[in-house]
Length: 73
Image (cartoon, rainbow, N blue to C red; front, side, top):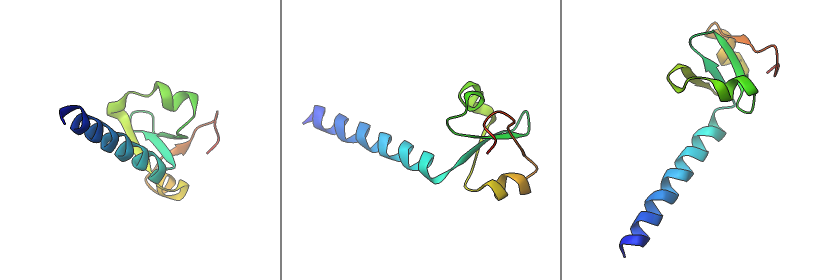
């Protein structure tokens, strides 16, 4: 029973994480003011404390972020 509960909790955490990634198409860096696609090289190197999620490109631009020159979101 205990292993089953741990499996259910782990699965719920994975689903929640996956849903968050799907709902946010872009990730911004609050330190640099740039935004990226989630699979961009620079998004992967970003400090998690500086990470901001955006649903749309327009949302990122309206908040003052500029597109990454590498992934060109």
